[in-house]
Length: 467
Image (cartoon, rainbow, N blue to C red; front, side, top):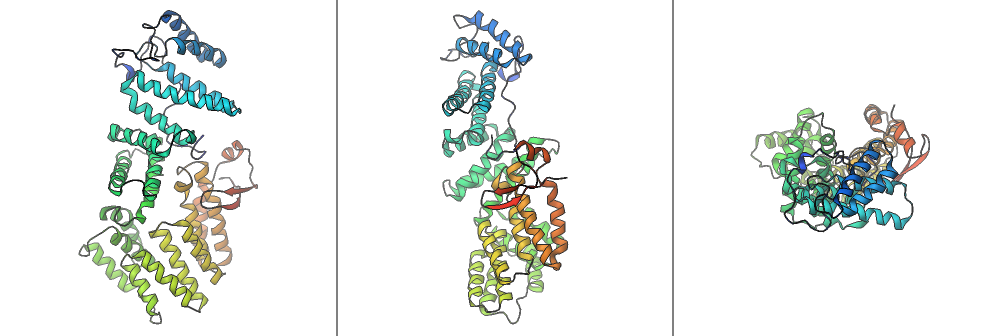
């Protein structure tokens, strides 16, 4: 039950584990001075003693895993004293757990709607009866709305619930909030439904949270770390959204690793220009020098192509792409057409973050030069990079993209000896990210079956398991 059917940085399980006579630390704030309707306690309710007896009974049945009997007694407690002793919200959290389990087994649409609305109501009641828990339970509700019950709230409502939690908790923001909030933030920003300045503040907050929670043993934050920064990278297509320091941190290591590779030089230089880095910075001087030495346009290149490379070096990516597109139309040599098409594909991939357009131009390069493996390498990288676009960065929806990526790299190494080593290394690297045998089996599928990868990819592939 997820935006993608896969592991995510989840909130704690809904079912409460607090028994009579015990207290949750979070609930020690005391009862409300005036008890709202729906927040009756054992002490305030007319049949409070009966409710307390039934509370003990249903919790006992839960221990014995007698769920039907437990649910029957839970309903009686909920009707009389849903707020239990006024310090703990066990009745509400158990109720969410009961209805989630009923929902898993229910096929009748009317019943499913009833159960979902009850789950959302229980979240609201926790916030009403325990005001100190309002922000946390609102975040939990937003999580469920985003991943499980998207038809029950507009994206704006879900975004607002998450943003309230982020503003309230600050550095203590629960991990489960970050990935869905990041996805909504990126989409709202690209759709121009949020002010850039406000979006930038949230993006910086998310990156700071990721940097703050760097314990490799924290599974929840590991999931966030593998998703949120990659998803936010889609906002790199907006000039000036991220500052110079962001691009230095994320791209300078590439240049340090490959200081003589023209494509790397152009990528890093373009990113730093895009981020507004000053030309008199030492690194900019070094990149300009490296570009002049290793990225010289061929003497036979036309003025149009020289302008294209110049625009690319200056970080004018859309202008560079347009120049190269015109060069494709004007050029008769199919090898050069392929070269220019692939450059356009790489611009869309690395700089403009438009994966469908990047694939379109990589495919054009293949049409012009069928035996060339480099465009297949690029398409494979597009697919492999789509885990955060098509899922939460881990789990099924993010893993199936490896199948189509590997398909492209297999094509590359089968047709072009010059890229065989690179393709093989990529295949060996990404095989470990394929779904497991258990994941495949749980979905009623089997290895060797055909499978359609959705999202923007829209390609058919063969199911394989990691070994």
